[in-house]
Length: 158
Image: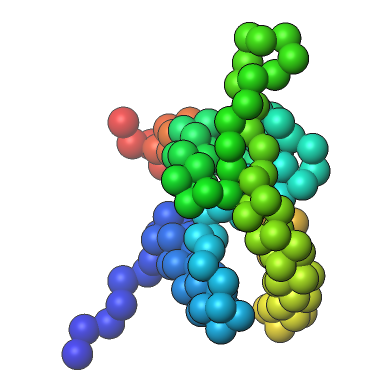
C-alpha cells in the first residue's frame, strides 16, 4: 500500500469545496429544492441590493466570468430576468416570482448553513471563514505567483 503524498494548497481547497458542495446539494435534495450551490452568491448579492453583474461581482469573491455564467444559468432556470436600468446604458437583473419564492426558502437554509459553519469552526478550533477571507485578501495584495518567486529566491533557486 502506498502512502498519500502531502497535499498541496489547491488540492485541499478544491477537496474542501467539493465536500461542502456535496453536503449542500444533499440538503437541497432533502428539502426538495431544485437549486445549484453556485447560485448562492448571486442570490445573496441580489437580496443585499445588487442590481448588475458588476454589482454582484463586487459583493463576492468570484470573477465576473463566474458570476455571468451563473446569471445565464439562473435566467435559463427562470429565476432571473434582465431589465434595462434607468440610464439606459446598463442592463440589470432581478429575481422573477419563482426566484423570489426560492429566496424565501433559501433564507432559512442559510441560517442553518451558518450555524453548521459555526459548529465546524468550534470542532476544528479555527475561525475558518475568517482564515479563508484573510488568505484571499493576502493573495490579492501579493499573488501566489509572486510568493512562489520569493520562496524560490529565498531557497537560492532560479
